[in-house]
Length: 600
Image (cartoon, rainbow, N blue to C red; front, side, top):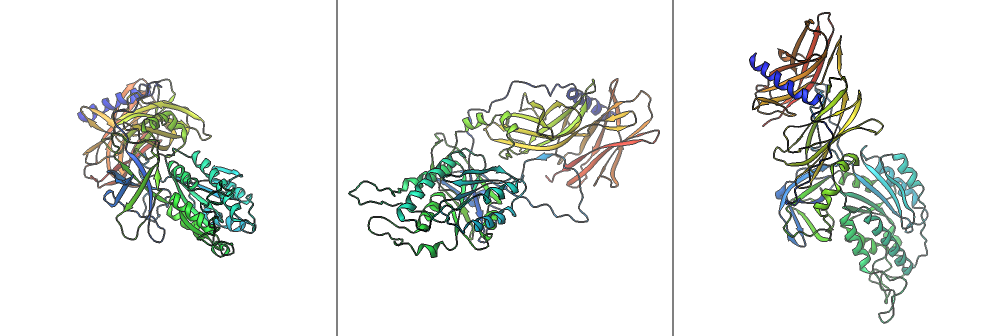
């Protein structure tokens, strides 16, 4: 009993500090990532089986990465799922609220560009394009965003959106502008104009955090050609290798993975051109497949047919891009930034195909860290997983009656060093209701608070570690108190006793006990009530552990209820901790939180 009372006093001081706003004051100070440590270099790639399904279990020893032809040291390899299947539900599935929010193994929405080479298609191919898009839309996840672009002159028909009706409308408005009487010189001029516009578009996507999937629809491109005798100045149809090389560089800087979709009958149609693939005289080849192969080689892209149904190839694109890997390379002392370098990724697995761009450009991590300040990360809306985080929100009441939403943040890796951290409360309409910037991101536990009126909010937490890498995690929080008669109950919190104090904790392992606590507001001295706490497997299931709560008065209007919960004998898994208040008149209310015990 004396231990419980000591614990109550310690928890009381923690909750009082949060309610008073000591951890939640806004501050202009923001920690800056340490400058004496260079962030790892991130190389993303796709690894698929022969049927197009992503490889699920690559590890660091399986992967080799070369920059400028030299093997580089890989620090880690992790898989990012771009789509996530809903877990199968069975009659015995236990449904509990998650104990915390995390961005670890989070499903990241893809960003796809449906890019049409509008001047290569002749009338009659539009429906194939629309069928293909329809097949792709059926395979997109709710978080996937798609852009529709027509080059060289149509521009962006639809910006990145999750609205599939808008995507359909944009593709329906694309009209084939090609001609069936195109000469070899005309095709070279068209190809040059298209490549210049593609280069400009890719430049707008440079410096991305996540890969970009470019699905390029084209009915033919010219290969490099002279278009004039060697003794004469270049002709109007001059197309040089540098035009394709520029796409290699800008695609690498934009982290763009190319899939080139061509009509299935293009090979048959190409036979009608006057010159063969070897070229004739000084002009060069008029075969429209040759330029497509040049572009595929320049981008490390894959060529797929646009068949009569139009769906098969796009289904494969959806499957292959549903997951990708990121290899983190150890940065060297004199690392090169801002310049394109040859890239090669190999996987030591038979039957596995790697999709990787032939070149890559790394951004200066110092500049990236400045650009990724906490404030920018919080309002960006991006899903960021470079730093794995856990976060949970809870509600307390200030002495004046206002509510405060507290937040507990911790890196998934206990050894991770955070340099800056912050949080937002966002209303359903997107308005920012409150924000918090941590004064000292190295604190453990990292606890903050924000004043907010009652309501439902999206809690968005962002952090940058000492190497400049960032992470973002989101959770839905309810800023409200539970009521029972004249009393109100704050959120239930879980923690552990360490060094004669209690600290919040989001996940448990080998600890023999956990400390559960919550605030009780209102009421009068001597009021009759019963306060109990129990642990169960589901929200309304039978108690596995039941014990009384210790009540300690904090001030005139607040009492702290605490209990020491034995968890050492519990098998790993999720449990619900239920704090229940019953008044003498029969009214009752409860507060709950899920306790996760991990296998250690």
